[in-house]
Image 1 (cartoon, rainbow, N blue to C red):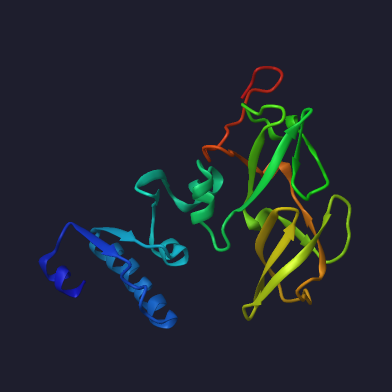
Image 2 (image 1 turned 90 degrees about the vertical axis):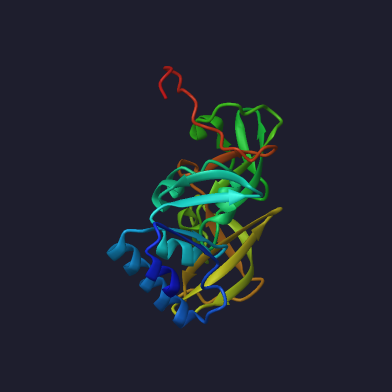
Amino acid sequence: VARALVRRPKLFLLDEPLSALDLKLREALQSELRDMHRRRGQTLVYASHDFLSTAAIASRIAVIDMGRLLQIGTLAEIYADPLHRRVGELVGSPSMALLEAKVRDQTVTIDGYPIPWQLSTLRVAGLVNGGSVTIGFWPEDIGFSTQSAPDFASATLWATDFRGKDQAVEVRFGMNRVRKVVSTDFRLAQGDPCFLHLDPAKAFVFASSSGSRLRPGPDRCGRE
């Protein structure tokens, strides 16, 4: 990078430049790269599998899978409107929870989650009775508790990973699993019962076959 700076290029292509560095040095160089971009104005194309490093540096993110450009935008735009289930898998730490569900008799039922939803709450087009869909949730939008509460469904804590000021947990129910970060105020151990709340207003619906996002359909009055 230093040698390239002397030549004043218009564009830098950085391919996993920080992956071999320890955490402290990696964070310091992330700040240096951001500052270099701010001062010099040159375009940086930063290719990485490390979501946290990418999010710390990038002003816009291109999500690429197997040579296909799935989505491009700011991180806020991608979180608000993921276009494909692979976007949910590649973005976030933890990444999006992708839950398998069935459509039956005007309701959607997530495997292992006993609270069905009316199709009208999802407002998406293309749902076929008897078909399968994938329901996506960003982990931050999933309610978690160790105590039973209204609209919370029971699940089992599969694993917990203490991270200092917080902990990452993996919760399983049916064929599905959820990973999210919770407070260390929760005293948790593998196998403990726990409870989850899934809000259909915060759900993203993906076609099980193609992975593409199913877009909102018109309401009964024909409005989007």
